Image (cartoon, rainbow, N blue to C red; front, side, top):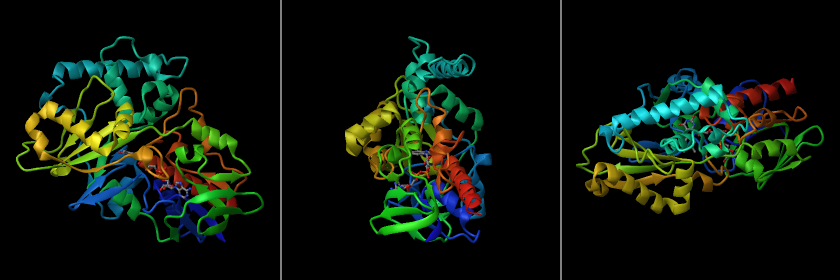
Length: 406
Ligand SMILES: Cc1cc2nc3c(=O)[nH]c(=O)nc-3n(C[C@H](O)[C@H](O)[C@H](O)COP(=O)(O)OP(=O)(O)OC[C@H]3O[C@@H](n4cnc5c(N)ncnc54)[C@H](O)[C@@H]3O)c2cc1C
């Protein structure tokens, strides 16, 4: 019998555990997967930490992970990202970049000042604008989804709260998140299959047996909630309905090692084809390492997941060769990639609200009977879709649970 059970050891579960540890309340973390961190996941390749999930400390100056990183000896790189540049103007001339940015600014202004009654972001696109494909590509990277599936109100809530500061952790964002779990009991590879909060305690079924607690904090993704990976008794239909209206969009990464003679420069950026959503955003030599990091969102990521990893790498090589010349093919060595839609216990990348459903976030984070609490990036009112939003949601849910137990 514990005071509090935390379901999920991602950024939200870790935020909750850090808040509870040291309060005198007993706590246990139950994680379905085999690693701590969830969508914050760094893999080590030849001594380089590659982030398959979150990589950027968005809103860096107020991001709680920045302070945690500084306090625990991690290296925060505070240099500006190269996203706005196009390396050597390849395939995206300055005049086109100016026109594409202006089209995006106009679109964004329309969302803010004259949002469509439908709350559907695609309805704010100017019909026939040549940069609509660019807007779809940006939406894919930012929201993990195309504009037709995006709530304007939800998008603007994030946009208004976020700053322009994007920093990185040299040792990996996933490494930082995983290292930040305090020394509390942890069970890995233990999916919770049912949660029963009838009576005065909460009972959680796992393959390893049943755990009882006075309160539970559920941090699993909206994809897992909506597909019924956990059976709740009594039913929590309003919460599951809210989760279904906050689906996980899709974003994926591909990493190439660079062979000798590649001729690239550190910390540069390339968009593959600025006129379509199905294109990669390539970061050349991040931290000066012999790497290219490809990032795909929305339709582009969905296409890659359909192709499988081999097809995804082949697509990226074609895009890079079209810009950098054919000689680059022999210098690009696929070393790691993600497929978040197919990743067990996660099922996607980050949440967005469907048109008309921005209020689902407030619904999803509503406690039930002072025993069941909800956290996870999708429950944050403004910083959803991020690792710091997830962390803050965990702290909020822990405070709610601690208050209920008092
Ligand atoms: C490709 C990609 C790039 C990203 N880039 C950034 C970025 O640059 N910056 C940023 O801030 N964010 C980024 N994100 C988003 C960020 O990673 C997530 O928003 C955040 O990590 C989510 O944390 P969470 O704790 O809410 O959920 P999760 O990380 O999904 O944690 C939930 C945990 O619950 C576990 N679980 C699921 N079901 C069960 C069950 N039945 N029983 C027990 N455990 C269960 C899961 O295994 C998981 O570990 C990115 C994500 C992706 C995929």
